[in-house]
Image (cartoon, one colour):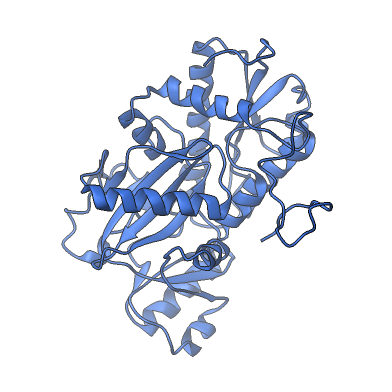
Length: 368
C-alpha cells in the first residue's frame, strides 16, 4: 500500500469485542462470538508485518472508553467489532460511534450494518429495488405461526437479527405447520427475538465477495453439498461453520473459484452489485445467494463486514483473485483511508447519502 498524499500514515487500532458470555442463544454460540479474537490477531500481525504502527483494542465494556488512548486525528480503526455478549445491533452502534467520534474506519457505516443485520428489513429493501429474495414471514410467537394459513412450505426458520449461522440447525427447515410452530417457539424462546421464515430455495448456494468503490467482485465461491442426498439438508448450519468434528463441517467444502458458466457468473455478479448498492455497503461485503431450478438468483443474506479470518470465505475469494492475506488486509485498510467522510474538508460525505425527497439545500441522513 502506497503512502497517502500527506506522507504520514496514522496508527491502526484493531478494534474487536472480547465476550466472555452470551445473554441469549445456545452455549456453543460463544465459539462464533469469540472467533473475532483470533481474526484480530491475524489482522494485527499482517499490519505489523507491513510496517504499520498497530494497537490491538479489545473491548469488554463500552467501546468509547477503549478508544480513549487512540484519538481519531492520529489513528484509523480497523473495525472488527461485532458487539458484546450477543447484544442486538451492537455492530451498527459501534460503527455509529466511530462515525460520531470522527474516525476513519474499515467496512460499512452504521446505517448499512443496521439494514443488513435486520433480515426482514434488508429483504424489504431488496424487494423494493426489484432484487429477488425468497418470500418471508415474521412471527412473534408460536400462536402466530398457527394462525398463518397462506404459507408455502418448506420454509427456512431463523432468528431475524443473527449472523454466523446462529440458530440454524437440522430442524431449521420445516415442512408443515407443526414443525413451524416448534421452530418459531425455539427461536423466540432461545434467541429472544422475532423468527423469520423464508421460502426455502432448493438449489446451488453461492457466496459473492465484493470490495471497493465502485464494488469489484472477487472470485465466486460455491458451497459443495454433494455429500447430502436430501436437498433439505443442504444448508450452511451452525455445525457446518463452527463444529470442526461434525459431519456438516467436513462435508461442506467451498469451491472457489466456483465452476459456473459465464452467463450465470455474470448474473451472480450483477445481482451482488445491486444488493451492495441497495443496502449501502462500503469497504467490503459478502452476498449469499441461492440459485433456483429456473436459474433465478435469490439473495438470502447481505453481510456487511464479513469474517476476515484466514480460513473464512472472504479471504478465500481474495486469495483466488491473487491476494495473500497481508495484501487483502492492506487493501481493506487502503479503502478506508481513501474514503471521504462528512467531516472531510475537501468534500461532502460519500458514505452518508441524502434522501432524494429532501431539498438539496437541506441535507440529512438517509433513513430507509
